[in-house]
Image (cartoon, rainbow, N blue to C red; front, side, top):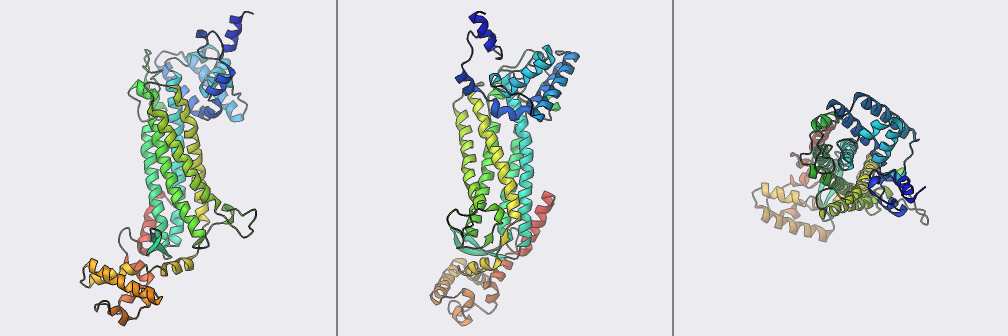
Length: 469
């Protein structure tokens, strides 16, 4: 056999083989192949191909027999992949060529006709969008599950007093339930961001072909409708070349992880011996190989670390796009691994946190003791004086002197005798002691968004109605 024939045989797997006079080197094959990570797009690839084939038939571009053959072949490929018997070949580079090659093996010329009017450029953009749309739907459900887990803990702890902090210094007493509901608000906004991003993800690039559209009379709107997409990408160059939808998703995902990380930091602090506010179930912790007394909060610590990983993926995707001219460039193959890992990391984290929060043990006595250490009701005394007619700045100054005296005596404000308090301002009366108690301070903040137990319960009811819990 001639050298030219050898090259043709070696190169026959490639979609562009007729142009080239030598086969791709093994090193380049390994360097450029994506099949071993992008094969997870197989469902989206088959889904998009079937919608494309059905449209080609409706437009008179593909015959009925060819359509039936493609549908039959794709059904067999789906079965093979699900059974684990499908052979993924490195020589075929990616998920798209692997499926197309197998389809052609099964149904012959009809398999070759499937690619009419499309390119791998618009095909991969479509597959990623279809895949990501479904992942966003699952992530939204996982966010709801985590929110419900937090709401349930908040409902049980609407009366539990926690020291609220600013600058990590005791500031004012808050309900522990109120504190947890702050994270519910964060995760609710995260879900909104994912929903917003989904609308821009859910647009069809197919029909843009390589970069300029196609001369075939495609009905792109029909394909979009078949795939449940909200519209088509209106510019062929933009459709194949931009990955802003992936970047936008990654930004939303990074924010979810930032909120997870903030919650993780608090769980870690609260579980430490210095705080002792909570305990995590043993199944979410590990011990030490040398110190037998240790119980380490590994799950929140690792989630805090994985946040950097997800934020890093966002930075990677932004950097990937920043220098690309129009239209498609091979750089964009590098969008998948960070995107896939972001989705996987986020799904795993949300699942484990929903379960972990459900197994949280709360220690109310430790929380209340800590709240008593920081003169958390000082602001209540200032508010009391304002209601007696004093300007707030003057009240602030008076209370600062009262706190200084309490510190010197080693007592809480509520433990100062009435006569002592009246030295700071004669308008202080016996009714002040209810306000100076932690419980009185908590109950006083009975305003929309406030920390009073009644408000916590109202917010719990709102979130349950919103989440269907």
